[in-house]
Length: 491
Ligand code: NAD
Image 1 (tube, rainbow, N blue to C red):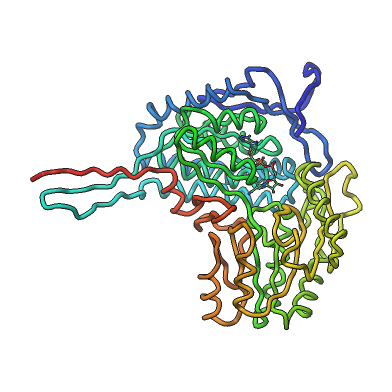
Image 2: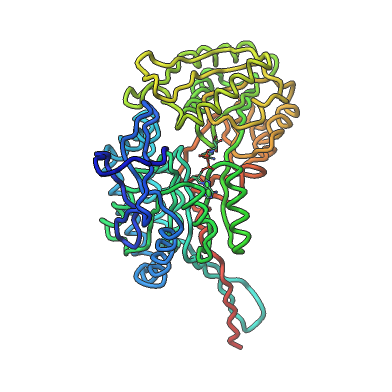
């Protein structure tokens, strides 16, 4: 992301627009931000650098839609529109995947997988819209009590750059299904696929203002959205630091929010694990999306007696991973921006200074442009559990291995960071797998498998510093509704 200060008169970069109240609009201030391709560090498009005035208009358009044409639709009609949007995403998946890959630097196959998941989010939430049932409650004689689920009204969605389309799909898909109107502030580092998907929403017939997107910087358009007095609920995925600002802004307006803030997710390998099955999954869980995944499996805890054998198997696979420009479609691409690369390199330097042993390194292809933001995937072990690599989110292709003595030690280590998002448990002992899964303090546990970022149907979210609230699955629908109790005295 670069804030654009050149004279635009002769600029031939494609310009993307905000979508506000059904209209494609530039920022009122006329400023632009460059979309930069991480694979080569070159700008390839422009997006509006919006400000508070643009956000004000988007919120007003959403409010009008909620109180007007959008709010009047039945749940079935809303659902049909969402299903149509899913079909439109699927029909345009190649174009969208290419755009997503260029914008984020992720391999094309990951861009394709992201678009398939995004289409599926709209299908899942579209077909759920008319199944958000209420309840009745037994009460006093002569009374009937009904619980109905009302939309909040206007919801604000602040989306990060790592999986722009998927995180947008899971968040606005659930919110729209509930009947809310949405204002989206996507990440300045990667968001063009979202602008296209919002155009598709207009094409398939969403009423004007039901879904609005306003691009811009976090501290400008993002802060204006988070602070807005006419927003009824906020959904945020991103860093813990920004998450704290969002929560404070929500608090000042006395509204609710969901925060999904990343993690330091452990994979626990007991000595009786099927290591052949585990190895590709363990390596992919940290390499996918260059490790820039909130649920990346960034720590591997291995039972002491199996450490040498298991670590060697993981290292052999890890050494084969290749970082390359997105169009070469290798295991991973470049980091999103120079700041993120610098952050990852900082962790690598610190690991060196701490004397950590490098167990394996992947490679960066020779053809990778020097102007791209590549880092070399690196695996360390055994790492002291107190080391920063075992506790802090790197958000890059850096894997740390450590040992544990027994089940109790494994559980203590797995739960021993400030985060709690996802965990993986690998064992042939069914009773132990259940004991350990139940003991994990996190939002999702996989047994003999792992899904970094996967699972449209599976409720997802954190405990502790990983955040609160649940996205994905049917569970997310309860975040975007408020239960209303109707007490009827009929004698
Ligand atoms: P960030 O949290 O600053 O950005 C996420 C979103 O928040 C973007 O849309 C951004 O524009 C917006 N934002 C930023 N400041 C804001 C503000 N003051 N008010 C409202 N919105 C604001 O994340 P980043 O700086 O792009 O990345 C930094 C680190 O965050 C990464 O290194 C990684 O550790 C973490 N991260 C986590 C996730 C995740 O999926 N959990 C995603 C992206 C980044």
